[in-house]
Image 1: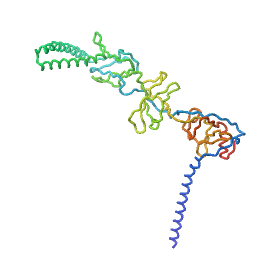
Image 2 (image 1 turned 90 degrees about the vertical axis):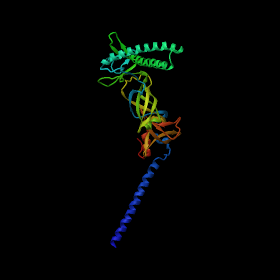
Image 3 (image 1 turned 90 degrees about the horizontal axis):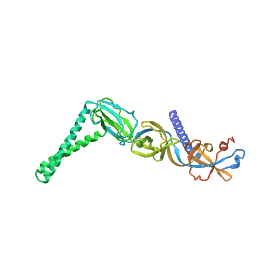
Image 4 (image 1 turned 60 degrees about the vertical axis):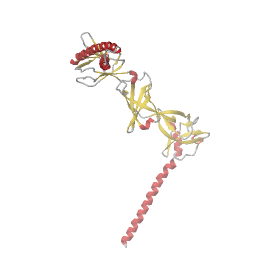
Length: 358
């Protein structure tokens, strides 16, 4: 019997404890609802003993975000690549990496046993083209006179165009070379731009990159931006005199980030290829800004006090960030031509808290 009585008591206590927890959860749930309710207007005369100053609200269309890291780079494919036309044992570059060079400038001298083989091959290709061209011209007249068969003409034509294609290929490679009377070979720049050298060391084989030329106007800043920013992103700020304009977004996303390519707004942006910089994202926002002194907190909600006749209307707002000495915020009300209390705000807050004035 005693055991049954004890069991009943424990069961009763469990029920009471459960009801208590349920009551506390319900109470905590109701508290935010109460805090978000609009506060009643306050008579302006209640601040008669204080210095009362108002200021107009300023609209703002932008807000600065947290700084991001950018890399001064160029988009894939915009670089003009010069390849080694033959195997090279030694290269002596005459300009430092990253130098601005003019079209036709001598970039490097090259040495190796295959250099002279290439020059011999070029001369052979040139001679072969001359021979096949002469053969082609002579037999073209023979074809009209029906002296040769069509099958013979096909072979002659094939040989001529193969020789022509081979020579044009080597001639294109020769366009990047300069050869003096002693057959010393140097590499020249095909255009004006920034010189980018390869980091590879050791022997350079035919087809490897000798150097790249990048047009200075192709310089971009590559920035990895959180996806939450991309829909509202307007531009980037690098300094007071330099901003970066958004040019394009990479279509492939890397988990929670997306690459944005930005161009320089003016010549004031003095950037160096390969440089890592800190940029400030500027996001589009339909909001307002006001002095920080105008904002006060009451029951975990931020408010401002609007002048409304002889009263102060207490309006809840949502803070979005800061701009210098101002807060940037949004509100569920049109605030055009409104004036906000910017002094003795702590006195007003104290009255709401029943703590008196400042």
